Each structure stands twice: as C-alpha cells, then as structure tokens.
Image (cartoon, rainbow, N blue to C red):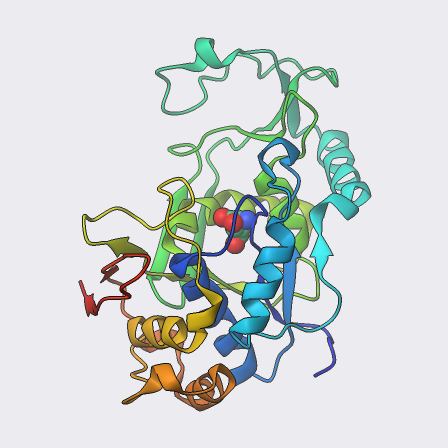
Length: 302
Ligand code: GLU
C-alpha cells in the first residue's frame, strides 16, 4: 500500500520494549487502517531524550514485524521534526497565546490546575517553560469507542506546557502538530490518553490543523488490577509467541480468533480479523489478563 494522505498511526515512545498493552493499541490501529484501506504509519515519540532507552526502537520494530504488523512509508521520528514544532510555537507566540512560566515544580505542588501565576509574563524566555492560555476553552468530540466526550480545559489541565523549561517540546504540542498533519486521519490509542485529547484538539484548532478521528481503547490490566505499562514493568512481548500474543489481543478486541490460533501464522490471524474489526464494537471496559513470563495463562473480560 502506498502512503497517501489520511492514515492511521502507532506512536510508541522508545522508552522500552512493547508489552501486551502496546500490542493491543498497535493491532487495533493497524486493523482500523487496513479495514479502511488506509496506510498505517509508525512514529517514534522520542523527544524526551532522557527517557529514551538505547535499543528500544529496534526492539519495537522487530516486535511489530514478528507480529506481522507491517507499516507503510519510512519510520518517522519526532526528533527529526523540530522545525515544525518551533514554527508552531512561533505562531502561537505571535498570536499572544503563550506565556513564559518561571514557577518551579515545588511552587506548583498541590495545585490540580495551573494557578495562573505567570500569565502576564509574555516576553519569550528560552530558560522558562512556555505555557498556552486555555481560558474557558472546552473541547467536544465523538470517540469511536468511548462515545461523546466533553473536556473543559480550564478544569484540567489548565494552561498547559507546550515547551518545557529544559527546552524539550512538550508531548501535546508535538503530537498535535503530527496528528493534525494531512497524513493522519485516525488515532486509535489507549484510554489512558483520553485526557490528552482535549489539549491536543485545542492546539490543532489554534494552529489551524485538521483533527483526526479518535478511538480510545480499553486498558489491559494484570490479575491484580494494575494497568499494563512500562512503569509497572509489564513483561516484554515474547516474539516467539507472536500468534499467541495476537490471539490474546484479538480476543480482547471482541474478535475470537478460533481454536488453535496460537499455532497459526500471525499474518493469517490479522488478515481474517480485518473485515471483522470495528471500533464501535470494541468494549469500553478494561480487559484483564493473567500475566506470567512463562505461562501465558487465560484471558477474561472485565
Ligand atoms: N508516545 C505515547 C506513548 O507511548 C503515545 C502517544 C499517542 O498515541 O498519542 O504512550
């Protein structure tokens, strides 16, 4: 498939190997793009360099390949698009939407929402965090999985950081610029990122970009209820059990892959799932899996 305009994307941070939760996001967004005949791109969200882990990119791409999640076009990296983000910041600054915040982390401790302390600090200062004023903005969108959403930015997160004090472009800004580009029409990702969607849509609107359609997937929790994540040390995917891993995520997506799925080819499991997949029929409820490195265990729905 050629990478034309409008597509899906998988945007892992190269901070560790893929786990079952990230495989769920990759598989669902791949199925969604393929069902619509769209390209599916891989982008590394690698701006937070201190958190990047050497070798993570290679390990993530290898895991995608072994699970037959083939991507279109070149792998993209946010670190290669700094000019686009700086341009977006300059545009927001020229419109008077940014201010330069000198508050320290400890000064902001205890505030659920930014208290507005530095709102009148309009003079650009590279040594300060740049924040955008949200005033009373509210964002509404229809989530393909979670249904209609309304997020008041004044309630959370308030005036948010678009460039950190250390100069690193903040996640919301880079993601809004990238997901608002013509190449992206669909963003299927984990429900933990639902609160990020309001700020990202707000930025796309301020920058005159075209928002994608969003679908936020249920999370996968381990038997003790913890979300599977790198922070919780979810086990890395075992590429030698690719069919079995795919069978687990397909089941969580409501697409029973049938008997002996673990003995089949990953590409065949995916090809069969493409016409059966629909974000509208994915459960909103979190899935539970039994996690153990050696025994893949059984899965059940929440
Ligand atoms: N890079 C983010 C992460 O790995 C996800 C970004 C996104 O899908 O918007 O959690």
